[in-house]
Length: 345
Image (cartoon, rainbow, N blue to C red; front, side):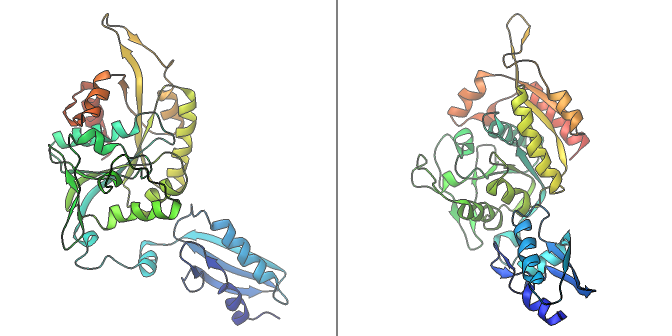
C-alpha cells in the first residue's frame, strides 16, 4: 500500500516547467494525505492563470495512480499568498533597483488586439497625468512591436546606468520611459525572440530599472493573452487595467478576452476607453467612420465604467511621428483622466 513517503517521492518528480523545480521542493504540494486509497493534496500555484496548471495536475495524477493501492487522486487548487510567493522568489535585495523604487500605482493599458491605438492612449494617459502634477513613468512592455519612444522622443536616446541599474530616459516634460527600442543599436532592428526571452525582458524593465518614486507607472501591454501579456499581468503588481477598444464589434469581442484574463488574475478593470469613436466634421456633425459605438454595452457587460470616447484626430499621428505626442491636448482626454482619477485611482 502507498505510504506518505511514497506519495511524496512521486510528487517530487512532478516539475514546474517554468521554475524547473519539483512542486514538492517549491512547497506547492500542501496538505498531503491518503484515505481509503484516495490521495488528497492541495496544489498552491503562483497564479491561478498558470498555463502549466493542467499539465502539473495531470502529471501528479498519473504518478500517484501508479502507486500500489491508490485508486483515485483529488487535487484542490488555490493561489499562493504574497508571503508564500516571497519564500519562493525572495524579496528584492537591498541596493537593487527594485528595492529603491517606490511606485504608488501601476496601471496596465490593454486591448487584447493591435490596431486600436492602445500605445497612443498609454502615452496620452501618461502625459495628462503629468499635467495634473503627478510623477509618471511609461513601461513599454510590447517587446516585439515597441512604439512608445517614437511618440515621446524627438531624438533617439540610450538609457544610462548607475550602481543600482538602468536609468530610464526622460521626455521633455519629465516622463520616465523604458522600452526595448532604447536598448537597440538601431531602433529599426527587429526583436526576434521567443517567449522566455520576452518575459525576461519585461521582468527586467520592472526589477532592473531605477524608476525611483512615481505616482503612476503606465504599462503598455502587448496585444493578445499569451506569454508576454501574462508576464505583465502576473509579474507586475498591477493596481488596475484600462481597456482600449474601437467601435467595431470585432474589437469588443477581443477586448472581452483581455477582460477575462484580468478577471482570472484578480486585477480590477478601471474602465473602458473607446478610441477612434468618431470623426468631428467641420459642420459640427459626428461621423461614425467605423460604425456605431458598442462601448456602453461592452462596459455594462463587463460591469465597469465607460471612461470616454475619443475622436479620430490626424494631429495625433503627426505629433506621434515627430516624437511630440506629449504636447497634444484634448478636452475629451482631459475629462477622461479626471473621471479616472476621481472614481477609481
